[in-house]
Length: 494
Image (cartoon, rainbow, N blue to C red; front, side, top):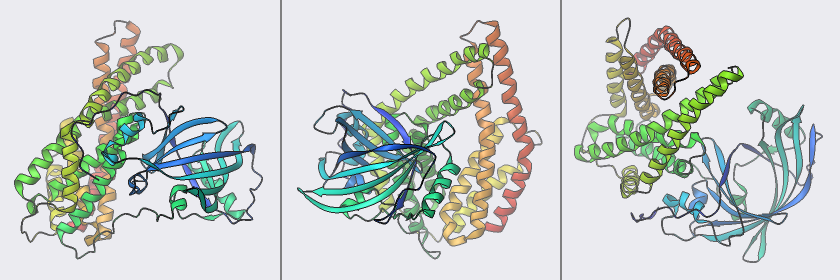
């Protein structure tokens, strides 16, 4: 990535953006493949003409991002596909713009800098298939595509492929459809998007994990590269702000980077690592309130579905109150993600992944991970029979740090480290429920300050009791998990 000028700022968005998560499976098919009979509605055969845009070095493609101008039945739109956890998010701007819309380019500011976008290939796709139903519920769309790739005025490649795109079905329904299609003759796909196949680009591959005997600095560089990559991948979705998973993944990457640097601190130049940790702390604290609100909105929305109509209406005001706060927080995030401070942090992180500032040290990654486990073990030993909420939150933080450190040392320790990681994850998730319940009660009490209705107070009291019950249940389930964690930690680190 080229250097970003710090004066870059988002341009005014002139066209409305729509977005939705995309979950799909791809399969390869032979020239004589025919779709089997499936329960559902046949999709009329139609043509899609998509012109893909990228930089001369295919920076978007290598980042698993695609930007295209699509024409379908006279409708013209710009479509951007960006990572969303293990899936992707499709962002669309409908209109007749001849050039990529500024609203989409703004989402790609880290990837593009000042490099120019250009058309790289046009795909003409003839599509037919089925909208598969289970009863009246559409669970997936199955599309059989015949693709021709046109570059510089001539057809360069032709191929076919099969896609299963989730609608309202779950993972099990997708796998069931996949099995039926395999029985009809479909086979493994190489995982490359159409654009990669059209341009004969290899599928992106992650860096190879260091060998067990690798020096600590090599393990650190590998880990930093992984998490910097994830941060960059989820920056566009965080800017867009329509899917909470994007911000969650960006925050996880930030937190893991902090933990890796903290673990490796004994082998790093003190001033260098302290400064970088402070900036990562700033970013984590920026994203924290938004993540908390996303969790609470999702939880209370689910809880409200079980209420009767009268209480559900009252509860809707509370959820709306949270959404207003979330909108305000998003504006603050957008402002900071276009700041010179953020761009400089990204530059420093990329440099750190390639050339961290180290000092001579005999410490191995195993010894570094053991240090974090000892801190966790000491904190657990200090727990009383009735620990405070703050003490449990502290254990959660130390369990995360110990898990991230174990991930750094996994290649050199092997299965014992893997089992410890799994156990630490279980503790972390359980104590996460405790923390979420604590925050939920705080939001409920805050909302009560703005409501004078007696029924709202009664409903809030019920919800506060629910949160206390959640915390009590966590405390009951916690002891065996902590015991297993310590046992696996001793086996992994001694």
